[in-house]
Every structure is written in C-alpha cells, then in structure tokens.
Length: 116
Image 1: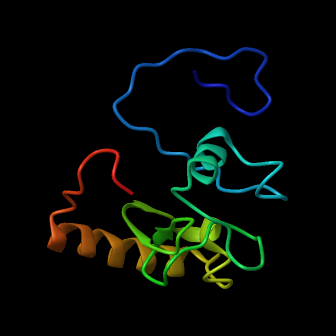
Image 2 (image 1 turned 60 degrees about the horizontal axis):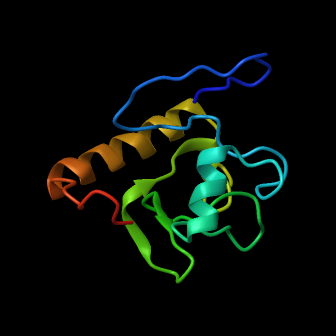
C-alpha cells in the first residue's frame, strides 16, 4: 500500500523493494513513516543517542538494536543527521552517496535477503 503524505486514498503497488525517501519527521518514534517504524519495531534499527534519526555508522550503515551495523540497510543525507549533523548540503550528500555506491560495488552487496 502506498499512501503519499496528504493523499486521501492509499493505492496498492507491486514492488520487489521499498525505498522510503521521506526520512524522519519531528519525533522519530511517534512521527515515523511505516518503513522506519517497522525497522525500529523489529530491531533492525535503533535511534541515535540524541533521538534525531536512526543510528548509523559514519559510512551509512544503519545500526541495529544490539549495536551491530547492517550489511544491507543504509541511511544517507539529512535522514542520517544523528550521526552526521552537517549532512544537508547537496555536495556533501553527493559525496556520501558516492562513497556508499563504491562500497556496495566493491563488496558485491550480496547480503542474504532479510538479513540486516
């Protein structure tokens, strides 16, 4: 189900993957998008110490509830403001995504489906 913010109705789409580009809103717990809420609920992610965003490593890996970085869940740009408070300018985001893309290419990014 896809329910864009402000839309009257949700619609169903068929997809292999979901990318939630909305990031976090004011309060990451009460205002979280469904994808963020599910990541927190199932333990695949935790909040950063200041509760600004999901906790991430400096190289964009989301950190799970036990403190382990994910091999297949990443957070970039302003959504990662808890770990990288100054990541709001387009050149910085471009550099961050470039580094992540290179990492994914060099590692093959072949984590098993469903494994954080």
